[in-house]
Image (cartoon, rainbow, N blue to C red):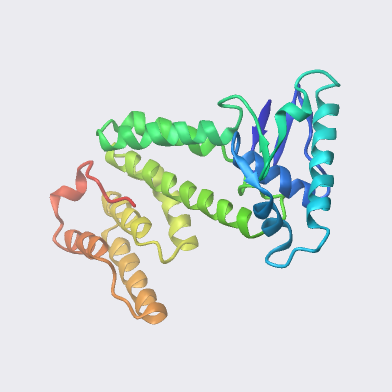
Length: 264
């Protein structure tokens, strides 16, 4: 079984898809695949499908969606194993999708991420960059980009996207520690423009500019960020960002070394 959630929803058996084309059964499958080997309650399904005011026919309609997914799973398997009722099982309080470990791109992503974070903490920067890059390469667009997410799926998608942003920052940090400031410069420019309130990314961009001999631009990036924070939020930059600015003003030799810029 091949399950991909980090992009368009993809669920295959023997290379054949069992993803429903209709929006609501698609949401049912997505919720199950995000929670493998766990019971997803009927209440959770109702909240995802209809919000706080499900129709009287909600349970019957949910059963119909489950039957649709099972039918597609059986067709994808060619009528052979796996038995759809054994894979998508009915439980007293809801439904469970059973699968073997590491069927999902999300499982590989979490493994790469955990190992990459550990390597970064241990100072193994090259290994950290490789692992975190591997995690990011698993993404094929926004998580579940072709699923019309309800409240539960929206929360899961937001959590995954936040994780992706953090992993990207950590990979850039690993690259900066190795002295690859030229390599990440354009990437940081785009990220700073896209995520203007992210002070950690702004600090990384300032360090990369400084190391490239562009001290004036690094200080300008600080001033633009500071003005944005004051104008929009009434806040001064965080301590870490101010420390980078002061280090640049002082031409601190530490900025030229493979130092930790900061991470969330």
